[in-house]
Amino acid sequence: MTGMRTAAVLVLEDGRIFRGTAYGARGRALGEAVFSTGMTGYQETLTDPSYHRQIVVQTAPHIGNTGWNSEDDESGRVWAAGYVVRDPARTPSHWRSTRTLEDVLVEQGVVGIAEVDTRALTRYLREHGAMRAGIFSGDALSAEDDLVAQVQASPRMQGADLAKEVTTATPYVVPAEGRTRFRVAALDLGIKANTPCRMAARGIEVHVLPASSGLDDVLAVEPHGVFLSNGPGDPETQRGAIELTRRVLERELPLFGICFGNQILGRALGLNTYKMRFGHRGLNVPVIDVATGKVAITAQNHGFALEGEPGQRFDSPFGKARVSHYCANDGTVEGLRCEEVPAFSVQYHPEAAAGPHDAGSLFDEFVTLMEARHAQTQ
Ligand SMILES: NC(=O)CC[C@H](N)C(=O)O
Image: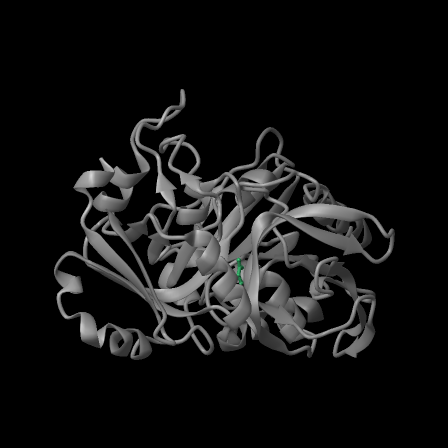
């Protein structure tokens, strides 16, 4: 099979070129090159809307071994802009698999490249930082000399307002499993399918709302709590969601945010966000809970982070708040908790798709906040 593969190149914005063979669709893919260290879960990664406009490099060398199934998609399509792998599976095998990964990439027009030295590429990105890149194969490869210029002309991730490109066009409801205990308004900035499922399993009816929703849309749901989802792009661009969060905090409605949601809560509280050198993407990122000292192994996928120090307490327009969690690897902010309003958030993914389940109890904490608030207002 490898013998039949045609040439492809991966071009970084600084002119560095990695050669390989065409994988998935042929053509051109432009995006930010980022690496993910997950050993498993490529289907969840590819369909996670947070990867919109990113070219994903998998550090795990064998990709596609378990094929593609009809259950694990995190959204209705592949969002990754391009895909870089070392050694694609020749013959996938898994009892749930209905098709091959490469068939899905071809069908959805996702341009990939295989047989790249992904270890060298990852070390390069770690050293020089995530950067714009392009994958070129087929007809797109013919004009090789201006490939770097094409990459340099593509948009940067800083300043990119992407939630509006991935959000649901219309609201929808994910019903609670069993008795409905609470209703939650979930702002879809690029939500992963597994998140409403984890809430539904706890008796929450989830009303998923478009990213442009305002306070009236949220209040129309008569929610017991509000959820801010993960999502692609630069959190600084999300003025509407940040303003909505402030209105929700003012009303003391319980609020929980994941990843992009953590950055948006932070900005609503007055913290700044910045672009990290190469971000956190993988399934084994250690996070320390300041209150207990306990470490959770977490699933992550982010390139921006909140400014702040581990354990830092700060004044916000909604009273005292603190940095509740930080990353054991680099000390970056991994969670926030308000002390005077019922709101908290984490930079990692307790929905664990794919990933470890260490952080799953955060959904229970959201339920506890809603129970407490409900008891107060009765
Ligand atoms: N998964 C996410 O929600 C990512 C948040 C944001 N786009 C970042 O890269 O930091």
